[in-house]
Image (cartoon, rainbow, N blue to C red):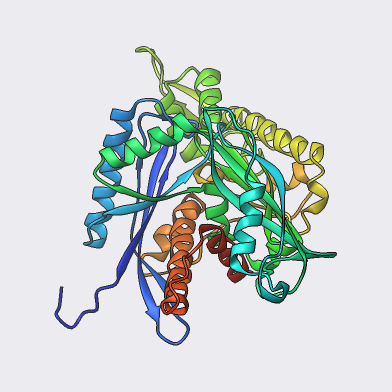
Length: 422
């Protein structure tokens, strides 16, 4: 590197999916005036994933090799070494619940302090969990000071009683441990484990969307994951096992072709609707078990894709209606994930949900913007955005409290992340 070239801190987002592993590497460029950072992506790659299913490492050795390959490619592209990563987590093992906590304000003159906030959230997170479950996030939704509700950050206010409502994200302990083991055996430290839908929100959602009400629908290879945001906080999450893998399997079974060939057919010729398909359009379908190739009408391929995609959307729609979340989606639904790249996926979603639909494209400062401005990189970009906000808070907290030695709080950090985002 040129001696005159400034070296910046590198942060890395690692999205370990069932079909692909995506890595995003970014430089943190400080802005001196307000202690904020500019993010400049310097490397990104996507490699096939092995050993994963529905967000769970089933073959750790195979998953380790896939992670190593992805990291090596990202390092080669960026010219930088990866030492630690922010890892996304999702899947059927993730659940959530709402909880409340309440404390009596202990500060001088009844002024609410960081410690009061911490104590209220700590009280809210005191829930009964089975031994195989653990909390990965406690996300404050809102605070109440005496009778005043809907407060985002109560520090500095005056009151007698402080209440908090939180959304607790829960994961299966064995899965969390295996994710850590997979990454660490690849020679990389895990800086933090972050719910993928929350990470993606930093990359593809606007403050207005989060305030008005919006859902992220992450259509991956192993699961389809839903997260509803309303009034600037996560209100609801849900996952189903049907995903891009099931679309491919339907094509493979329906057309009697191997899974890898079905995946290729889906990507190259697939669509979610039969519009604009000439009746004389044919595709070549490779035979299975040594059988000869055959010519199949393209509409037959698309029928299998359409049926499964429509079923997935309908299941998600039913969950939204059951939990009375659909009425909160004033800004509609944002689609992310590699499987959403199928032609007409957004149009089909609009038909099923009856809501405004858009494809979530992460916006980043990068010389490789065209490469990563894709819904499949929403989680990876969101992870580095999340990491940058953590760094910003830590820098300001260190500067503000250096003289009195006040301890930084994880809960306070989360509140600050949410507050700054909106």
